[in-house]
Length: 429
Image 1 (cartoon, rainbow, N blue to C red):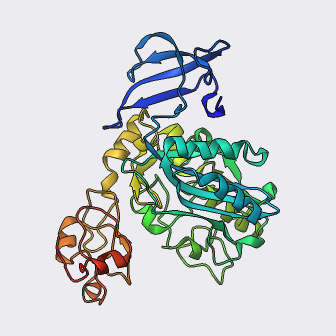
Image 2 (spheres, rainbow, N blue to C red):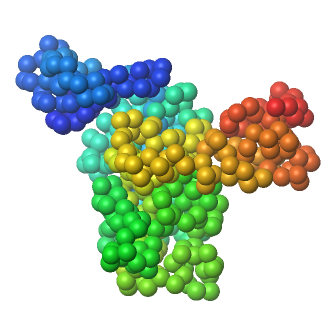
Image 3 (cartoon, helix red, strand yellow):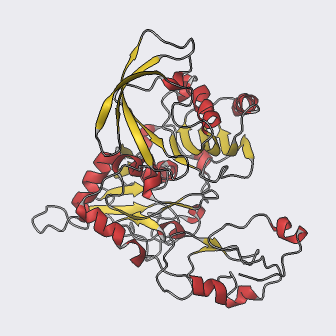
């Protein structure tokens, strides 16, 4: 019997229409019975209901192996764990040996400090890897996050290898005390994060909070902020996480650093990123710099959207795979929002501007510059795409290695594909 089937009582399982991805019914796990009509799977006692909440009765059924969705659906899976791995090369060999029989593609990095993984695959394969991983005591309670990949694989191939740093920073991350929980920030559950963020953003003259009491820190890249962020967060002034320098010594910070004048002993710093790992790493750096009151969003934005919906969030979430951008509904199709969050969502495009002309854009999804040697990710309106033939500037239009203009918001593939097809000089919309 596969352990992935034994979801705890109270869990709500959602079944989606395979074409539209709209939920057509759900059920809540009530209990598992001792008798089973199947030799391999237990019997599930469940309360079945429509998405609107109308109960349609009780049923007993044999729960299939694809207990988290249809076996043919593709998922993108993200997880990380900081834990001591004495022999990382041996650990990598074990993972490679297991995955050789599964259709998994993505980036899985392992070193002495732990593992960082983002991959895609058919749901039965993607979840089988998680089940196998959790059999190891070191990873038994790892927080795993999934999202749909409607067009199949979101990564071109599997990269499972040793990497000196699980995340890239100019500082040598391998020397940071990432395995010491006292050196990092206090993780906040999504519900607590929402409560604090609502308090900070609330317009209330009687509130005891002031702007100096809290700083909301987006520990991502500027282009990620451009398509979605928490209400009240300033745009990061970096386009590569490696260059992040919040809270460093006075001689190294810029005027745009929100921590430059913060009281290290009193200011509460709320940090967030996509999945949580960048915050965990950078909070350790800030702790070494003397900041005392550090808080991170546990599991990052993706975990928040899954549990709380888009409350206090505006726009989409940037993801580092071929999908580029996901709406909040991808994480929680049933999420309900209050009036304030609905208003924020309805105005989501007001902050999103074309990189070239500054006009509002209707699609919260980046495109790559057609100039291979630039390859800048940028938001662009339809008119500028046509006028600049997929490039981000006039200079790029005259570059020697130009790719054809892609329709819509597709992402460019490797250069040799266009070279071999003789398409690199065909500039057409």
